[in-house]
Length: 234
Image (tube, rainbow, N blue to C red; front, side, top):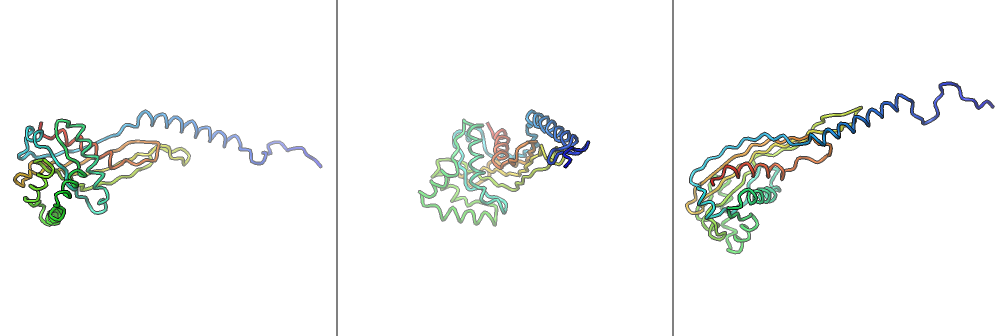
């Protein structure tokens, strides 16, 4: 039997020179793009903030404090209420340490201890129809939380996603992650039932990453809170 191998015959399972060259290019390109992404992964943020100051003053804000009541959200985002309030309040505490902020759990606990749960629920049912909070209930909530002002957040819109940015030989290396947010922030005067201050934040966030993590709601809420905190009276 002739065991000689003819010239040019490939051993089984051994890649040819073209395949090896292709994979070498892939690895080099991947390493280069990952290094580029690591150095250029900063977020691009475009935001618009509009606000109206009706009666809220910096002195009253510092002296009287703000308690957060239950946020409202667009359909499909109801489960995010607690996360929205928590992130927003924690950011405000950092940005405005001179102001007393009562978190949502603290407000709800005070309402429950004072047996105001039914009145609080009715207030929100009426709010859905009228856009108004019952002045008597507002006053009571202000009393049990030890604040004059009550703040409500309204998550009017939130979306997130990603798109391919760079790929080599079908291998996706870098993705552009994005999130869009529309958030209302109203401060009510519990003393007379009026709106003392309001603002709206529209924010577009994008960043190029090599990982698969999406831009989180907490990330954009924190950015929105910082932007709105700068507009509060000092």
